[in-house]
Length: 455
Image (tube, rainbow, N blue to C red; front, top):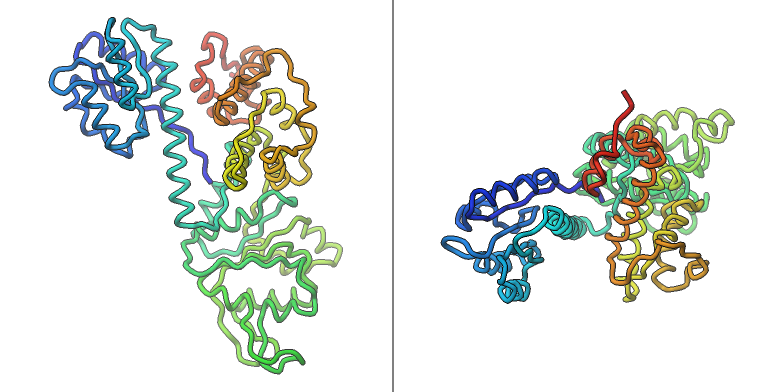
């Protein structure tokens, strides 16, 4: 799953020019791209289900009213947030608007901070809804493809590699510790390739050596005692698709020689057969070991290493991208809550801070299992955590809001500890400087205290 940074966008409908210009300026200073309109009719080009922003509208307008606009939007897309601006004394009208599906209402006159707080919340909700729709569509198209979640520089580098080499036919080696997501990356590469054949996963460490050759290359009838009929091997079966060889370091040396020849010639011979058979599959190998070091020790063929390692993708350990833990945990918890039909658990900022500093030897897989235990209420040590002053999260706060609250707190504390130096703070947080600036803007941190003294 690619996590995207939301674009702030707003349609503003206000007939009084001076007020329209003032509200536009407020929204623009808050980072919104504003489409300012004097009437509902002028706003029609942006009123569609794909609009990624929010709508801010006055109630009393020439032509169609703000309430009529609200009715149209609810029919068009009930998840498109509409912020209704009402005049003094129009409280009953505001109540009607909320009942009709408005996201919120603001009574004139209002402070700029009030508008920005509401607009940012509405934009966040809209971005989450559109992202969920995109994920559901992607899942429907590729139900077997797991998500690649995170915003860290390390995981963005992996995404860049997938986009770059995914559409090519080059064989790829994915390096990473147990549970770091090697198969996730392999499936992402398969989808990025556009190949229509199957994705065939083989765990080389789980296959007994006696059946390895038959499983990979296939066999003819009578090739050995129990071979009563011909069997198509995995490489042949994956025609037009991708073969994922996990734990390739476990492959017997004798079969490494045969695999090397198959990869070079793109032809194989079934066990007990003499006829060369062309194969049409892409090979993605994965290893948790240092294959080059194994080659030097004679336990892995060096020529096979260089054949499968034309392109290598190195996956970071979870403790090398700790800033992704809140996003990963929120994703896994939501999935587990649906899977087990249990309510979403709540956590505190103190608990999240402890989880981010915890050692995760099982990496993302261990974190996913931990999320399951949280949902089931059997996670070890959770009830014993001490909540410090100011660390509680009020009940009813959603997981994305908790994630953002923690992220905002962490950025603020790091900036303070860095003396307002953005470059130092970005380095301590493990973020690109531009990403940190985007987050400073998102959370409306005090601009006067945020400086870039890297020059």
